[in-house]
Length: 445
Image 1 (tube, rainbow, N blue to C red):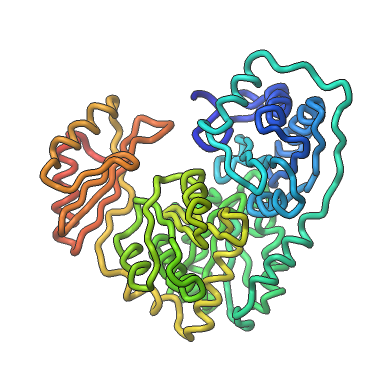
Image 2 (cartoon, rainbow, N blue to C red):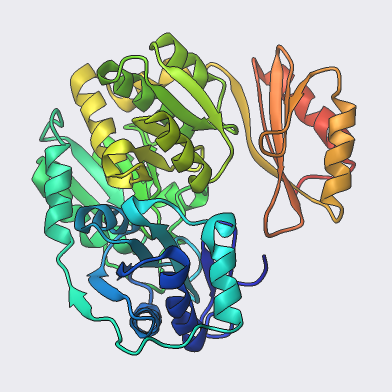
């Protein structure tokens, strides 16, 4: 795996890494690899999007497959559209939150089942970069489809319990969600103050990545300025979302996931709820207390979606702000996460800060990165150094003591080891970080 073909998707700089010829070749490769006769295709607002999508569609139709052209929309809308229209596969033209010069593809099978490197991207890479099969004698057809109206109706059906009149600030970071936020808020009866809602693939205000605190500063300030009940930030293609409480404080995504899981379990007694292994220990504790079955997953949407389907789980959450819903074909959807949180606030009558306070009972490091040249040997050193703890290797290395615990994972694309550490209090947190740093033998980035 190298270049533009990543673990879960395809991304590269246009046109140096992702050329129009390569986009067309990828289009040619998708139908035979996925055994697809109909492919739903859409794109976000990136400047290169129209050209990249045009080349992709050309390749798909040259293979003999038909294209359902859904135009410009978000990634959750693409996932919904695959299932709604019964397509055999789907391709979303996006590079998520990457800088403006990037573009790429998120590829799905029928019912929006994910395609990762092991389950299809490697085969697509082999065809696209090698000997493509000959073009079909009869090319496929392109049919335009309206995805917006069915998707809005989908959200409307799932909005029961959301209280109108709430004041919200939404920062779309000039991403694709800004095209639909006013309509969604209007449908819900929310009083909207918008930040950077105009889709602009140059991202003139800030990177559309709500995982970075620096990108939430304008949202925090506007929440305080307007006296809003909630602040909301989307990423570039709408599959991730972050929240700011009424005091302007950033709500940790894993704890928001715990809050959502508890509400989901009210309607799904005893259900399995999925969370990624970087999450706070609060998450499985809340799920268990609510009568659910907590299931820890490897990081990455393809692993989480597969585990959800296996256990028919109604909900999953990742530390990175991905929230997954069975109602959206087991895929991540920022809009449905927003609906659920609004419902929780309305039903409890409590502001987000009060809902979150009881969940913030441990001290967390956040993600700490260590730059190393020999990831494998450093991981082995960590494994040996903490042999007196409970150690397991579901994804990287997880180490658990009674008073503190951590996970270290190697980056897929960079010479980095990523540490997430949590403890019962600040003293144990600081001591734990020092211990891991000593074992690493390098200073954090």
